[in-house]
Amino acid sequence: MFTRHYAHWPEGLPKSFPVPRESVYENLAKCAARHPERTAIHYYGTEINYGELKRDADALAGYLQQRCGVRRGDRVLLYLQNSPQFVIAYYAVLRADAVVVPINPMNLAEELRHYIEDADTAVAIVGQELGERVAAQPALKHVITAAYSDYLREKTDLPLPDFVRAPARSRSWRDALGAGLAPGLHQAQPEDLAAMPYTSGTTGKPKGCMHTHSSVQATTVAYLQWRGSGDGAVVLSPLPMFHVTGMQAGMNGPLCKGATLVVMSRWDRDCAARLIERRRVTNWSAITTMLVDFLSNPDLDKYDLSSLQVLGGGGAAMPEALARKLEEVFGLPYVEGYGLSETMAPTHINPPQRPKRQCGGIPIFNTDARVIDIEKLIELETHEVGEIIVSGPQIFRGYWKQPEATAEVFLEHDGKRFFRTGDLGYYDEDGYFFITDRLKRMINASGFKVWPAEVEALLYGHPAIQEACVIGAPDGYRGETVKALVVLKKNIQGTKPADITQWARDKMAAYKVPRVVEFVEHLPKTPTGKILWRELQEKERRK
Image 1: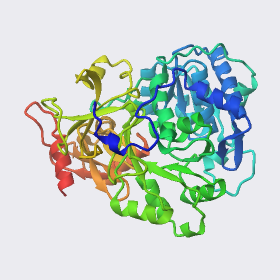
Image 2 (image 1 turned 90 degrees about the vertical axis):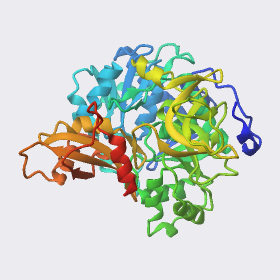
Image 3 (image 1 turned 30 degrees about the horizontal axis):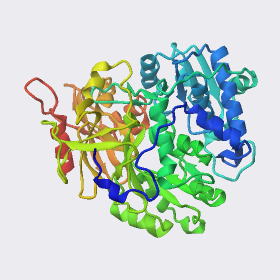
Image 4 (image 1 turned 120 degrees about the vertical axis):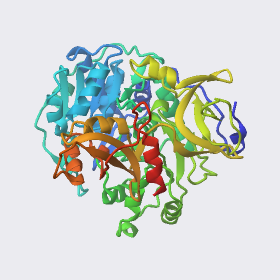
């Protein structure tokens, strides 16, 4: 067991604790029983208390079971922006003993089809602004459409996204709740599947990460406990809840502790500052690009941000200059963490009393982490770079319907089953882990994970493209941006790089679109014909 980090463990916290042996839904049920009138969600001026949140989740669960035929273990698609409806739908699916399949609302119809077919789902809960994409999916038998404006009960001067302000075009959501159908006996067990966020790999096909109630609970309970936050916490939640970081830090963790979620459907720096001031926000998890934008606001000094007590995040290392600026503005250190979709967010977090910059932190409760040589699979020592492997209760059970891919990412080491993260790094003499590179082929653009093979597969649909290789290019704002090296078909004339980018905007989510396109005569290949993407990636980094 790796223990050298114990010397810097947060004071007063146990090194481990038993993971709750009950469903994630029970967290909401208990808070609603204890504090039914406490505000659970603040949504652009509207307050929704714990009693109302549970009431709506239960009503939707009954509708899913009795009208949509949802049974224990069925997968239900959530295709929504951050909103009260996302939270209600998430807990309704769990109350119905089913599995949440959260999908990025930026995904277009062609991408959406894969998730529907792969997850074998016939039921979806969607935002009305996404309705056209869902209408083209014949596999969906039941679609519940939500209008975010249904939960705007109070007038507000806050800047609202157009899709939030838009009046309801359907009564689908209201009718589902208004049907007054009670769900059956809650039967979900700790090892039943609870959530299946999708990730991807070098095959280019997104894979469902099977998380049980137990693995979700492992980080749900850990989040606010690690920071010493509980009753009375007010959490700003702008990170997307379809992603495990927003799901855990911005929804499940706070709701487990009876905190208030200040939900934003779309990032807006002025709106965020106003909400921190008005709702006296205490906790905020944010990615680097979000904070760069927030700090660049020329009117920032007009806001009272003194309520903030906890500031942290992950996804990409926080630049030193920005970390210093954050401390000047907030008087707080930015506490970084590290995790993946396969680990339901954190395996590591910096100790709040002794954080290190550009560092993933130390292994959290019940978590064992090591660094191994990627070829010999032997354990490495301090400052030796290798692959980070982790073992703990938050590790997923495997990839949905992909036993071979699952087998590839697990190994037995020191008598335990470890997950191979695919990330390269090392630990220092204090037991803090640093991420240096990625063994996997992934681009991190503003916190969104982009898998090159998936983008390449779509690019090959362009009539002028013969070959394509997608890599990450350094970007001062996004951290990395997507770059495509393209070989055009012979006799193709008049096609410009901008044409490829524009075409891609209609075929894939905006964060996946190659913002840099370079035409090349040929792509380097192995003797067996495989494109040497790593060589191209390293060349780009040397620039």
